Image (cartoon, rainbow over all chains, first blue to last red; front, side, top):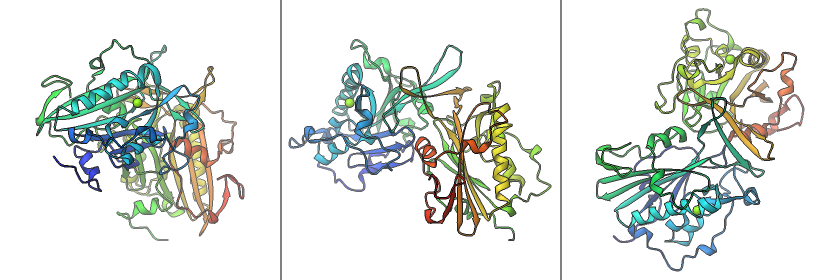
Length: 251
Length: 251
Ligand SMILES: [Mg+2]
Ligand SMILES: [Mg+2]
């Protein structure tokens, strides 16, 4: 197909299968984000990818992009670069820069700190999580439309006293939450009207290279219950052919 | 004044000084609530009290009220009575039952579990927190209008490694968060157009009877930054005569 018109209608195109929530929405040129002012990072971001849209403009240069505060957030609730400095964590993209190279503005917007979460660098952001981002682009080349929702999670863990606790570090003067996990849910329109879903959940820690990304597939409900949102709610489930690689599998 | 009309306009009356947020709003007969589907308890509730509105109908009976799930929330995100059972925590009201005795329906709605958070019972819910609720009603009798916003907080704490962590227990199969703290912010219209603010922050733990509630007054910014919302944002600060009992004090 030809180039789509970039305009006000793009958000509804990205969100056509439903909004997980409506808290502090930001509609950027090429992705939509819901911001959590308590944790100072997003609830989720949603992207819409197509084979055409992945073809990038060679004049677009990631090296020109700068990590920067999202001034559209109130000063009490935004993170800044100093929060990350010396923390030991990367500023990890939620909407991946590599998915938005059709315009300089689109890729620039992925560098806003509202689109970042503190991620373990080596062994996660730069390795296994990056593999998952590459998997998304690889799938995009073999489908009609791909929708991907990405976000941080804060999972409860059983402690010695037998009780469950949610525990996460916060960094910098703005107390930016370090998520315990990240998820990525892919809705792949393989052929027109035929869909597949893949739900990945990864711990925010060093993951050995030898572990395949398929070992991080989880039931969608696990992400939804702990995240506090529903994914691709408007999708007609009858059109769903594969879930986590299986016919009639988990939903 | 005479009885106000209870109808669609009541929410805008309650929220006249601004909404702290817009996430999963519920407008009940006599209070407004924003629900956090991640923690399975509210972000905040807001009430509007007047001397008239505290005069209760003697036929209204709290004993007829039952704690019950808020079926308006998706099953993944609502708490139920079994979550609290055996947990050691009370189902603590955010909008206090005693503030809503003008109709049976109004007080009944305060017993929805969306209006509850797990609170330490003896020494907190039944004692110091209850004292604070009584203080609100006492203040109401000496003013024109009183607006009160109440909610749970999850405050970070420094651990042995020098880092800050947010840590809270979750209870029951729905993993309802046990807040580390609760806040109550009072906006008191002492005389028409003259306002006072009191911001209380209490730990969710046994508090000795000897500690006065005034020792829990905190700068409003502390509540706003950790809660991820702004309180009484629309109030013209020039009309603010006292903050935490002091002229020209903290805001
Ligand atoms: Mg990355
Ligand atoms: Mg109580």
